[in-house]
Image (cartoon, rainbow, N blue to C red; front, side, top):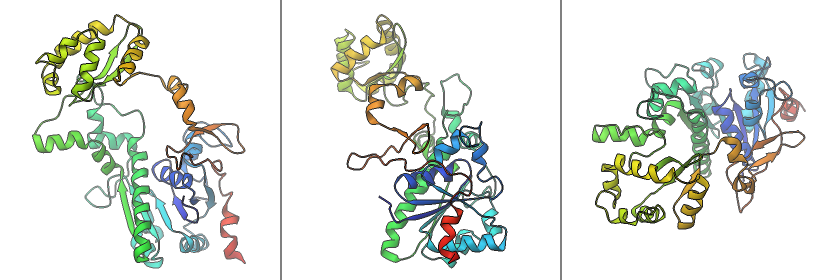
Length: 375
């Protein structure tokens, strides 16, 4: 899809490397610019998985070539400028002030290379009193209020179990870069694209944040439920938890029949979603009394047969072993290696982009990348 597009990534750990991996999955040539001494800190973020590098590094650095440069030296900086002249997109998540110190900040670099789409990721944003502060995933989740929305009504604030801010920011940067590529087709010029973990967190929390801004209140926390839909949460079958999602009154009427309570669909307390919101506690107690009488597999089979969305609450091993997950073929073998990784979530004409190469050894692509300039 992106054959012929060259990306330079000066990425550390997760957000920028994740963005580079997405573009690499889509077919771009991604040159990962790393420090000569040690490279990306992500290489040691965890125990040695393969070749001295962590599993996290292997996950987000597939389909790339590593180019080791010392950007603080005249020679390293000159080599970087040569590569920038041939690149379409640059992505970095350097600490605040580092790009300016190296002379590769957005205005400077795009001034020298007007065609370049320059993508900068920060923790708190490119403007404002905290723009020069570094930050990490749990810090941003806490500062943004995102962690305060997680868990149940009596739970303390807690971090979401995955790096939604880091990886989400990487996704936004990719979206911005692709939009900028389209603009460049019309104008012939690149642009500067910025995104931050804080902005991503605020967008993820927008349903609740915008509710507070416009209605002056925060919806109650629901451990597995939804602030605006009932029933839309986890229940316990006789042998384990599962989830039921009734997104409208028609589905609730079907659910009521399967529970042996068709009269609920005519009951003023439950017939409409707004009625169910006002009488949620009563309804959930009644449902739990019924649902605990049968194994969850029995309920899921019945509800699915009636067209009511329901699913077991799986562990990750259970989820990866589900026939549907296996049918998707999202786990891919890594060429030349003895392990598998989760591939791109996208397919084009029914075909998922393949993992073409494993994460690179530090500096393994330096000679190849710089060869055209050495002749």
